[in-house]
Image 1: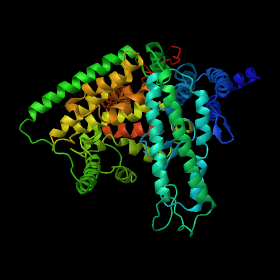
Image 2: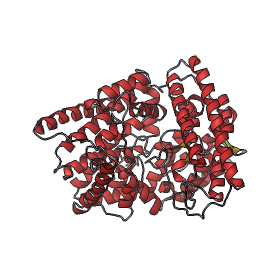
Image 3: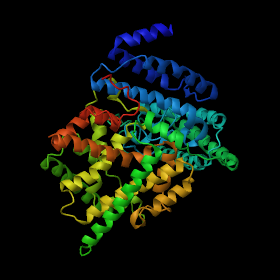
Image 4: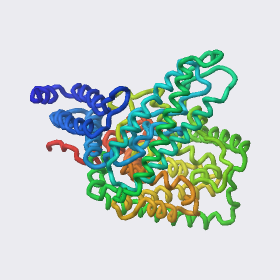
Length: 550
């Protein structure tokens, strides 16, 4: 049977890849038993054994005669399969990381898929508007229903000895407790007017009294909250026994970069690159500060009214800048995408790192907000290629999404965005220094040269002006994510470096910035090494590529 499958794949060409991709994506999802995803040792062992069949089927396909775009699709599928292989051999998040079992999220991700490994069944609370009608109340109750059984299963699955993952994971589960507690309060608070469910859905006013689905939601919230509270207690009781390292080691990191992230660098290469970017950012910042020493300091936004006014004006200014400077083709969904994601005013002081930047110049970080342009395109103009239509697995989009968003900050500065606000050039280099500092911390942490606490201190100490505070939450949340998802913290800097290469090749060959941007967006959210191959024909940055015969 396997021989027939291999022969069919070998003969069929690109259609075989599309078919295999659909089967692969269905296989990659865990089996669901009685409504609960199964991450037990038996289920994971069965999945690991089944993966080999899919990898054999893929290896039987020779994509070299295909057009580059279809060869890129092949490499995407290869990277995803390698990602699952790495999960089973090394990361094992279902066995090592309590955060894996957090499925209720009160914040919104700006990525195609939520960052880091998580169990199937995410409940994205920002998709729901209260009060809910009966139908949507029932839908939310159904999403919350698996949580008690999943957390009970987690107690048997979590057998790892990774101390930092365990301790920081307790904090993540406490965030789920807080989200559920807040959900319960909102659920109990009467609100005037009609009820709406998921964003964009409109419903009739709630009937008097609670219907069955309303009572089901109240009960589901309480059961999920009770299970989460009990899980926290169990994690805390087990914590003293967790004494092992959490990093994956340099050899595994190198394999992951080459075979999953498709990055043409080793751990040692990346250490050198991010150290160079850190030094460049800090030195350039000092030169900018020297140049601007006679200018007044930027004063952070100080009220909700000022926040609303200045952010609204910033988006208008930025969109006009993009159009007037022929940066990219303006789509009608771009402006509303930015306006929907300006956040709320934070009165507490001192500010978290990104608010230190944003509250001094609300225009600047709209450049990094290219994420919202990407997501609007995914929603309103999905890619015609089924392999690229949705979010790629294992966050392998990050060198493109995070790398390009980081590149946009400096690109737009050089294009003139900060010409009228010289002090904002300083902010660009503070941002780059912070990205490089936390990338270096990730690399040292995964080499088991630093604990998570030491990595947080390294990132904090190397970020200018003391804005990445150890007393804040940003530095800890970032390093915890990077410990769970290797290559994520480095993707901002490494992706930016690779974007610089593509831009140099494209502009050097006579393309305009507008042409480059449109071609990049049309290619989809794919690893940046594959983007470079597709846009320039340069395949040298794709690790493990089957070379054409001369």
